[in-house]
Amino acid sequence: MNIYTFDFDEIESQEDFYRDFSQTFGLAKDKVRDLDSLWDVLMGDAANLLI
Image 1 (cartoon, one colour):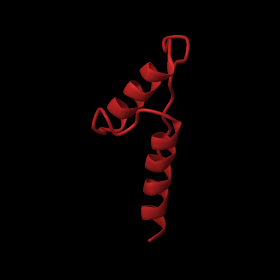
Image 2 (tube, rainbow, N blue to C red):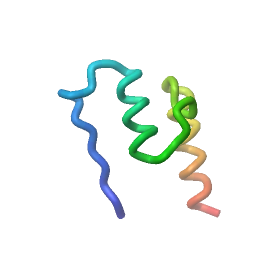
Image 3 (tube, rainbow, N blue to C red):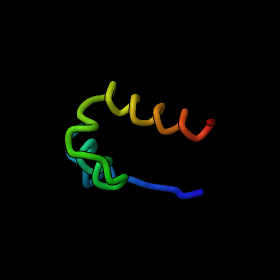
């Protein structure tokens, strides 16, 4: 199991977090742009693990 951390002292806005999240997990820049799309990515990946 991998553990990922984000330093929120360095992240100034939600947009910065979405960018860092996308870069960390190798996602397209526009894949995560708000909480809804973040949820979709997380749940989509979790659903694929169960199959």
